[in-house]
Length: 540
Image 1 (cartoon, one colour):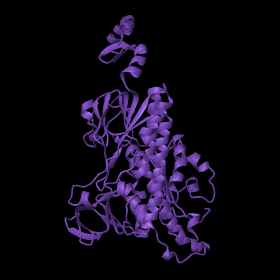
Image 2 (cartoon, helix red, strand yellow; image 1 turned 135 degrees about the vertical axis):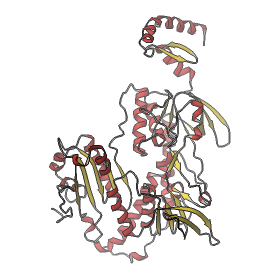
Image 3 (cartoon, one colour; image 1 turned 45 degrees about the vertical axis):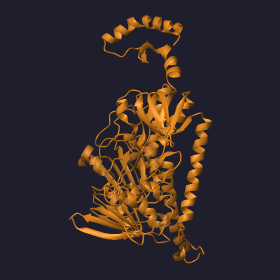
Image 4 (spheres, rainbow, N blue to C red; image 1 turned 180 degrees about the vertical axis):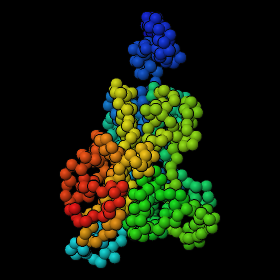
């Protein structure tokens, strides 16, 4: 630093020292001083010196997924200098992918495309009942190679568009695996093993997570995960899905819909954290479609036979060992946050031991200049839109003088099982725990989707539930929907709940007929009444 600049900074520091003394006496942070490179200077002067001269970037994002990219794009639009560090470690069987994170490459997008493929197959089999002249639907089969090729081509196009967008916005993209050297310094290791030293005033952790594997013989050698299924180079055939979270159910659902034998192994309960009445409905519906469930069991070992198929041993609740042979074993037993690879101890980052995640307040970690969004956060929804919104709002606070915080309550979500389940707000169990059974009212109804009439599809599991406070303004606490297009339906009602939806307002809303979404506006039977919630007619 030049003598002239040093002298200017020294004079400025002395001018604000009196105000700083008062701040110290009151126990407040100094209002005009900032520490940079081991020296304390005036904030207004060092805002330029520290940001533009001491560090390479205003914001360095570790992780090229939805949350990190959203923050990066928002920050650069607010004139921040930004870089994104991204690297994909291959899965145990060698699967890797491009820029964009889990959602684009091995999550929401390919999952929804394969879900749609299964729904189209179902529609083909129903089409003749609507009068379509088709070959025998029993001869209609999926071409797995054609499906995965189409899905991967779409993903690659999104990878390319994402790269171009970063280049256009002048966000530096660095394909390297990063870890902390200190709170402001990241070491990026490239595929060739070369190290790059990167410094930033602010660092955002957005590395997400990867699937867990059980510690049993054969798991890593022969098992796959959701990282692999969407680009699997062979038809999955008879598949065992170990784990009954939303990933396990969704994968089993579309595999069954594509014509493959699918079995779900459940260790404890299905869809932990979701409304269990709704969960039971979708499980029964999946069983009706032919998905098999093995309850209260866990795998013991996997061995490859001479014919290439996989022999799986599992243990039931009584300790008895069972065996069966499968073509594919897919693990969906949860995900681990990619925290350890970051060497957080070098930056003084505190990690929650039980979850190996970061406990942050308004996305700010215990290290003031280090932030986190997405699946690495402790007790936050592991959902792409949550990470995106949190990333954008954080960037606005850091570089746009915004004060708006991320609201993690009443976040809507959908499980894309064959008959979808969408929800927003509290489950019945949560509402009872928070408010007490006598303080809530539960409205519910079964219904018949019009599109189910002609093909005579089963309607036993199409169901809506609205949970509300019993007294006062009868504010709605939660809404649950099992049926076609649940994601589209619940999205609109999520906005209504954000706006303070009440039962009188819901009942006074005129529905669009005939739709499945209108069923929410027609609720009138409560569980407390004991009346039959079955529909009387399509218009009752």
